[in-house]
Image (cartoon, one colour):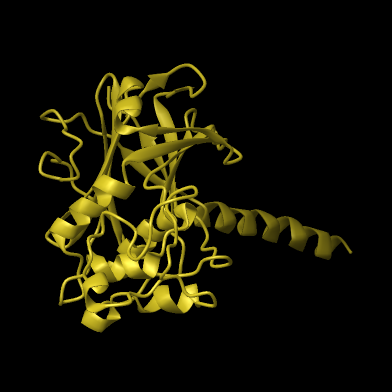
Length: 289
């Protein structure tokens, strides 16, 4: 019996060490921007080396000055781009770096939440090669990526803010496309008070996450004519806007299979559909002084 007890005591710390080493987050030391960062959906002002996550196909960088935190995300993977537009993206804030998330910033909010016909939107945004067309993408973001949502640690809504409203709080956000790269830029104040509030410690934890796919109740639309297929992405193809983010219009398919439609979006021009795996990244960030 004694030998069995000693064996357990010897193995347990070893297993614990393996567990701890397998749970390490990325530790990132932020940098002070050499030049002022303009939140415009381009990465031209970023001088720091990007960290590449091979699993999610997302590259990212963090910088800060005395007032703000800046986050850059980029991906040239079309299936990951589809996923970001479909489900949206949440940046979770653990302001003290103690493993407790205080708030989340959701941008973009995603076609899924707005109950928009994602399959048709994706098709209208692609060029002949299956990539996103930059001009169409810009029109799309002006219409459907013009607000940001703040949620609490339980994902309860604290407010949805337009660009102008968010800027009054010191928050800036933009989604862009350049050279087939989707570029996400976000600026957050290090300290904010009011209904939405946080105060960043010298070391914080950031979590980047795409919500789970929810296909129930989604009914994608198909164009009723060739003109519809190439329609402007600035409005809902085939129908008017309504509800929480846009109506489904008269072109909706009553028994449509949303998952099949989305998986094939863009494949006609050589695209790769949509990444079904959620994006989950976590990093400890040491703020620059």
